[in-house]
Image 1 (cartoon, helix red, strand yellow):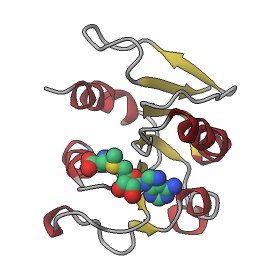
Image 2 (spheres, rainbow, N blue to C red):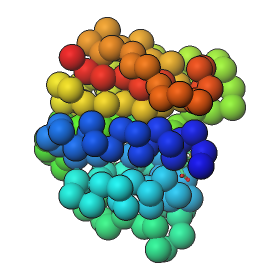
Image 3 (cartoon, rainbow, N blue to C red):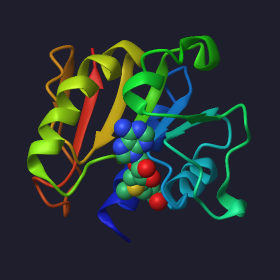
Length: 152
Ligand code: SAM
């Protein structure tokens, strides 16, 4: 199992104790979304990306696919997403460290706004989230590779 899969499954029971939908930032080919809908059958999952380029079998329905630049759509998604989120999986890092610094700068306050108290964020990006604690990861996960944050 990949670290990402282990971490997604590690968080399921904890996330299910929190009310609110799941946010998938970065649909890509839909692999993670496909996994999320399998492990969260009772939660609404909203997916964000510039475009829908996944295999049709992994495509979210139109109500749950939010198209556009996440920098804009996350800021204005409240009328569609309604409740604050119990879980956000963020998979939009670039291969460039400077670009990643720019991303985390606009992303952190938007994520803070969209998350419910007690909600979890799983990301490879290091986010400056003053209202969140950084959680320990389960054994065997590379220390710097992923970060789990929880809003308090
Ligand atoms: N989790 C996905 C999967 O399982 O296939 C992989 C996601 S892929 C690494 C990153 C995705 O994030 C790309 O599809 C890209 O278009 C999207 N993305 C990156 N930055 C974005 C932004 N600012 N707004 C919208 N989508 C973005």
